[in-house]
Image (cartoon, rainbow, N blue to C red; front, side, top):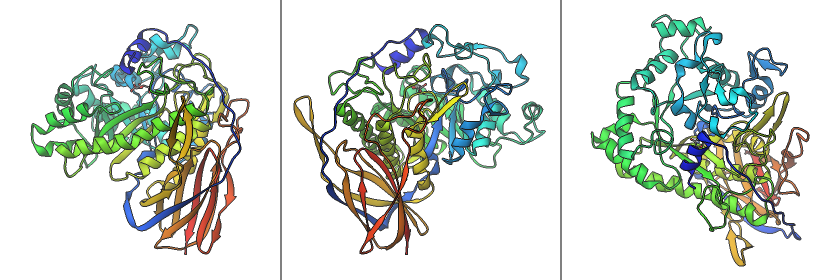
Length: 551
Ligand code: AHR
């Protein structure tokens, strides 16, 4: 089965289950390495937006995860889970995408505005994948959480809203009206008055708009050429109200769908080369799901288990995550054929591991999974990849924020925990807005046995960014057994002092749960400076952040 078929089935019926395996870890040996940060080779400014999030109206993400309701016993701010708001403020979230995902192309934004008791109930796109006994709100959208509530959530966490429009089911006119509802000046339009009646007189000024989602699949089943025509129609003369252009994100490829990128842009520029200026970004969705070690490409059979995995599965996931770099470079090359000046950025607005069902902390929550240290290393690896391509990646949204896939947080009723992925976002927030610097890692590759053959994977990777006198280096050591002791050579500057933040565990399956909320979290460590070069021991299976003050 392929991913698009899975989504078709999930929307129409239930999904299946799983396996398990574990492997011990042997004696460790410290590996010597060297990291060079080249101060006079800036790669560009790291867009804060690559540290973005994705919240789809899917199972427990909105109802239970974010929205608990004003009258809930769960502490809330106007209905929004307070603990989530408090935690998110610690990670400086720049942008949040809503309401989907596939859900977006079934959503009528008009259902989610106006007096709450008159809002209609609608069948959720993901209804078919919900188990018997699932909460009503997961099956039939009560529309209690709509545009106003989402924008309120964004304001509470100080993030920008990124709205995904329904291109499959609604018209371009209705898309324009959603923009009008959000952005038309106070008192100017009937929709602005409706917004004011809900308590929001001033415009929301939403800048980022997705024009459909996965339009090759659940978003309309278009060819890239057909979609390009729709994209042009939806965005041509769309109102802005902001005194500047809106930033439209076109539905882009899945994985290495070069033909989608090429076919879409070919059609766009058929109307003229400058048409690329009407596109802020091209979405790229990439999920790391195939842990079958090359045995199958079947979407169900190829998936691995979130918490029961062996050492080879550990590397297999990271190997899949590492593909992100070649996808960014590959799509960028194709985009350059039509947009040589690179006006269009890549918007990686869905990324993360996707495992088979079975690890949910809240049984029944569809596509919820329990992140472990492996997912933290995967997430650090992905964020470092984005940092290394600041010229190419404009936005990144981890799929998804809470109770779904690579969650930063898990919540159910009054229970809540921060996952290892959430901790990685807290560590890496320091990169936002910094100048990415070329950083070379010279560390021997890891060798391991993969189905009777020797396989290898790189020994240490990361990224560095400069913020005036502060230099941030993040890196992951994927080696399940051996620490790496690396000398950090800064070409063109001297380090005065520094400190480290480290997340690791002796158990590669380490994870937080509602009962053990702090089983794994980062700890601080000193950074030794020998003859003006910092030296740090990157523990096995770790995510590390070094904060260095330059002389
Ligand atoms: O994140 C879950 C789903 O994965 C999204 O709805 C869809 O865009 C993707 O296929």
